[in-house]
Length: 411
Ligand code: ATP
Ligand code: MG
Image 1 (cartoon, rainbow, N blue to C red):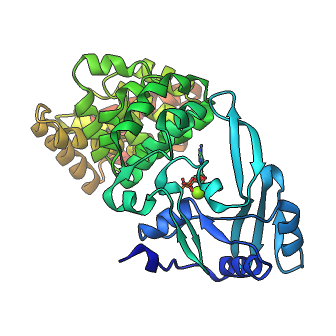
Image 2: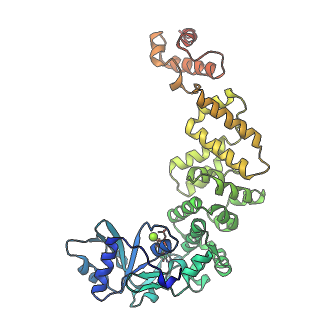
Image 3: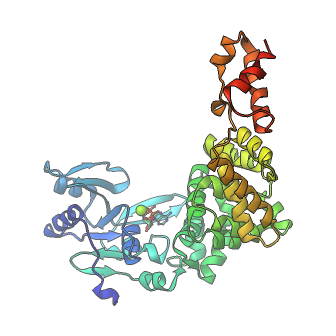
């Protein structure tokens, strides 16, 4: 397919917005992620339009009761029409970056090319006007085809202006397999110390996007140095010679942050992982799950009683995740004890198939039975937990009569 013939599928509501701009003598370029995604054959998740119309003009054009609009901040107007939503932004140039992130100066511009020049990567600097076609002055569509990530203009300058672009680049690599070309790669590494100045929320969001990517393994393997700016503990894993294995395991795991963070930090202890995830301000659930995985990472049950005891302590969801981690490692690390993991798996499957009791909720007696027997207060919990241990270790069947007899000892 020749790019000049590229026809981007545009939802009706977005098309309407472009028509309205066009009828009033303005450009109506779709730009950024939506054009990139469409060229890749992926349905865009949001639409950005850019035009030389200034915000007040945009508002006047769309303030007719049919379109709803809001937000004039930073020259961007968000417009809703017929189930579609787009951010319409006036062409702008950006300069005088101050804090390794934000431009000190923003000026409106007249030409789409001026606007494309401020964007981070060639693949994000492609514009498409439904009436005039593609505008791709940096060869972004060729880079997309060839799987190349290339900074727009001078890479060192671009990462110097805004260090977040380094992490965005790594995320685009992870997501689309766009490999940074040598000058871009070098500039990303050189500017990495500036990442310390980026807000932790942005860092964490980009890191999560990176870890979810199909090519996460390649990104982790290539950029331990950049990741170490926020997670210096990675240095310990690298020193132990375990980073390549770590990267492979992360890339082979299910696409879940809980699994992928657990595997990225697998060769650290649970406490260190907790410190890292607090530093990154992850949510509590993610942090607790990762810590739980690392606390139990050496548990590999080899008998049914061990399996049931582990299911009792961890709960079924976490046990399943631990099994997934162990299987992922077994599949990616030739030194792993694959036979032990296979046994773990077989025990788990058997436990589920036979619906073996592992938790108090599954026990054939409960608090009410204990009360009826005359047990009180903390004795009830102690007696039921002891009963569960007997059942898990196969000394008593999970049957009401046998368990009632056992509980009577506590009266
Ligand atoms: P996603 O699919 O994650 O939304 P995206 O490329 O659309 O990817 P956005 O954050 O939505 O990313 O930004 C839209 C566009 O704005 C980008 O495609 C890029 O052209 C430009 N852009 C965003 N952030 C930056 C930045 N930090 N530096 C330069 N240009 C940027
Ligand atoms: Mg976007």
